[in-house]
Image 1 (tube, rainbow, N blue to C red):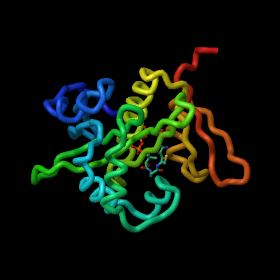
Image 2 (image 1 turned 90 degrees about the vertical axis):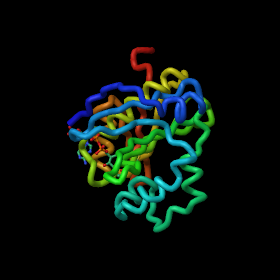
Image 3 (image 1 turned 180 degrees about the vertical axis):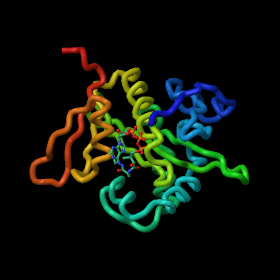
Image 4 (image 1 turned 90 degrees about the horizontal axis):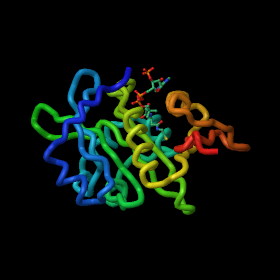
Length: 197
Ligand SMILES: CC(C)(COP(=O)(O)OP(=O)(O)OC[C@H]1O[C@@H](n2cnc3c(N)ncnc32)[C@H](O)[C@@H]1OP(=O)(O)O)[C@@H](O)C(=O)NCCC(=O)NCCS
């Protein structure tokens, strides 16, 4: 099932978007599973929300996302994850608003620039109760769009071989999938200019 982008701009635009980097995606409202969510760049003010999001994950989710299991998301690690330099890296969240009015994170998609400055490595994580609503696919679409505008050639990832959902999603987006010799992982490469020879 795919998400329906309403592209409604919100006042958060000034707060979370352009003040960090002029080419950041504008905050927008999107419907997932019939409910309105906000997609916007993460910022340092999201550190506590990231810790709460982490506490909702089961062991498999943590292992698939981070490559190993750990029990605690420390405040310092959370700050590192939300406070990235959005001028070269990109970290986006999808948020919903609870009945008491507080905002919580339902999904994160990010990339960080690799050393050559022409490719970036991606990672995704979606709340277990909100899977198969199109959140990761939407985040991938926005990441790709932004990376292309920034002049990158490709987005890459290394994914555990057993992670059939993530691999299926990357294949859908047109990525190549190759086994990593001697590792229980596959290499994902998603060209951003597929028609360029
Ligand atoms: C992998 C993950 C990010 C997918 O997020 P998601 O929001 O549920 O994915 P989407 O709803 O955008 O899926 C889009 C399409 O990808 C494919 N897909 C996604 N998850 C799938 C699964 N578990 N099995 C098979 N296909 C899957 C489907 O084709 C799906 O479309 P459909 O639902 O209409 O059939 C999520 O399962 C997750 O957080 N996993 C744990 C963390 C992780 O593995 N991170 C990856 C490390 S890079």
